[in-house]
Image 1 (tube, rainbow, N blue to C red):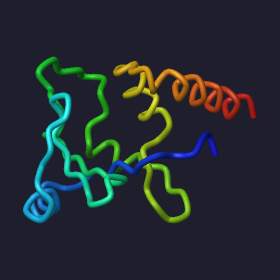
Image 2 (image 1 turned 90 degrees about the horizontal axis):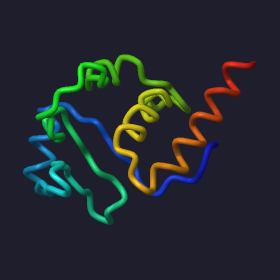
Image 3 (image 1 turned 180 degrees about the vertical axis):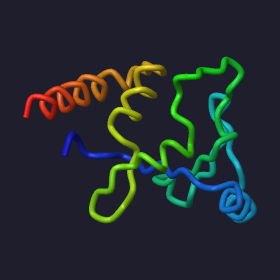
Image 4 (image 1 turned 180 degrees about the horizontal axis):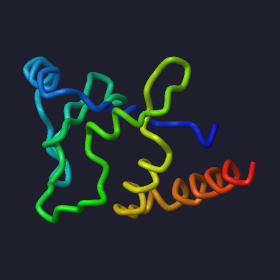
Length: 112
């Protein structure tokens, strides 16, 4: 309930990645490998999708992201702290509003 979403990003296993890549192909945008499903609203990523040349030992791993997923309506989602980490790291223009919304939400949850 923070805001309407425009797309869905999926984290997939290497095995599923390979199956999807064979079916839909792999796209590289800004150095990030992803599989874009027909219609463009769903994108799949896996561990090697991201450039890891400047290793960040604070970055959540895919396995920790899956293990710490928040379950909403029976579906697993990245925790808001994980989303905040990546949006803060990237600080793209489109992330700035999300960062403020997430920080406000987390602060509100901490107070209650």
